[in-house]
Image 1 (cartoon, rainbow, N blue to C red):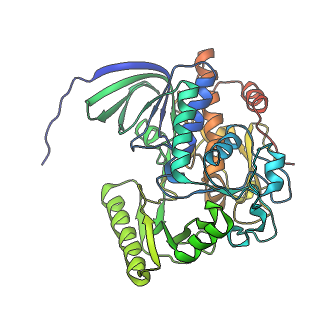
Image 2 (image 1 turned 30 degrees about the vertical axis):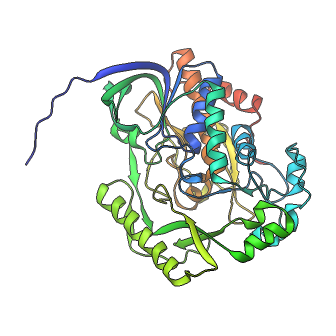
Length: 414
């Protein structure tokens, strides 16, 4: 049975750039576009920015380096790492604090905290951070950049004009209405805008995973003994599937239909509950639950170029950034601009885990620093295309690269 719905949609306002999704990619894209002087709107379906980095409890900013002491990710991604620890604890190695010019008067040097160094003696440019402190820092960043942020607002569908999206329909407590857009950055995590606009996409399944946090008296005592709150940092319980060991595989879940999303949320929370019941006692407690499902991969675009393992250590003339492997030392991958855009949709660009990548290359491009890296590139490309009245397929990539480098980014591997 079907009901017929006809509505008149109010145009609430128009923006030069609309960013859909307020995760790390969306935040970086919105900041980049706004700093280029464009009227920018960021639409976020939850009540906080950061996505999986905050509401998903993935509170580890993965490496900005290649494992051999070379920084290969800069720009807004580096800025976001600094903001992640600006108002809270961290365990960024002293070596990298000096290189990144981070002033820190902590006397309890984090390089001695072996329990929190997953790479043993390899001092990667990575750190844990406090989730609430980072949420506040992201709010501050958007205010400073002049970005209009709409929380608790769900993207529903695009309004098309040929192969371009001229407005996005959203829904929130005020009802259903539209925002006009010159350019759009799809940072939804699920390619929602591009998929609905007709871009070629692929759907992928996930195994059950859940990020939970717990704490006990031993870590509390250690924090008091060292007069350092990070010593009480709750253990990072990676329940279910582990992408490093590939252990804990369960049935498959998809992040692009309501039934599978609900099953994932319910099953993952049951898993955390079972863990709690096994460990509960006067010396133990879990201290938070995820505010969103921990999907790693859902739907991504095919892109005008799809990255794969075959592209490790390859040079791309249209590269917009470089990434290494957060799990190990070795693989390095340049990210071509072509992987961020669809061949047909002219004014929507992807950012974050939805760019054109597959296989193990997707593991390298879906994480926090890489999401911010592609987000910045997408925001700058959108700004450039809007100013020059061009499609995203027709922009001068050399001009985009100049802007990225001018703002502290890296284009090619060492």
